[in-house]
Length: 275
Image (cartoon, rainbow, N blue to C red):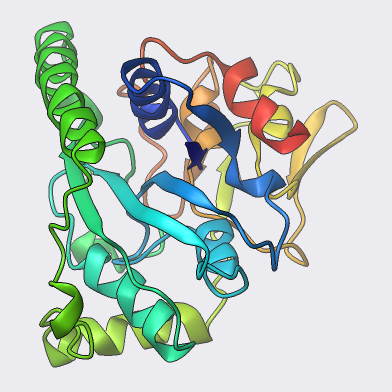
């Protein structure tokens, strides 16, 4: 089995590692290094966070290019901070447009919220998310997800078809009109997430540049600079892995804490761009 992952602050990578451990003979790979247009066979899974009611840019690019006709089984796992949306339906929406094989199963795991939603209007932003994170909450998440991942592994081993039965696959899972409009908007636009830097707090450690999966962050004169000509993947890795909390976004420069999965280090996130 091949298991692809995309991660920003470690939640999805932690899930992917545990799932790979639970399922024998699993090859774990970053989806950023996947060959566009490839034709995988056997069993294929993907683990990724929910982004803007859909999937991260690298995941969507892969879904729009690969040939899934040779797969025996195809599943996806999304991680989210509270509202998973209709991501399983969105994936099948992408695949159906291409006349492609659809998902056999889809799973959603609630983890820790790690974003102030800096692309949203201020009224829709979550301003106190970091204050709500405690060691007890993180420990509870670890217990909850360990149990859920075990169940997912058993379901995958049994080759569950939790999505629509094959005879019904001409009909996509139901999604409201607003949801479909949001899908369309997220695909059509490439908004730039504006990060703000507290220059006095920044130590020039370059961790933000190392963890950026789109290589948008570069160090200049000892400080990070975000290249607006490169697409942001909205992963918030630079924001959350800054040990000095020197990075903020528009309307959110609070230093009330940041979050990354306790089992995942910055080097683990940075490694996904190196294959």
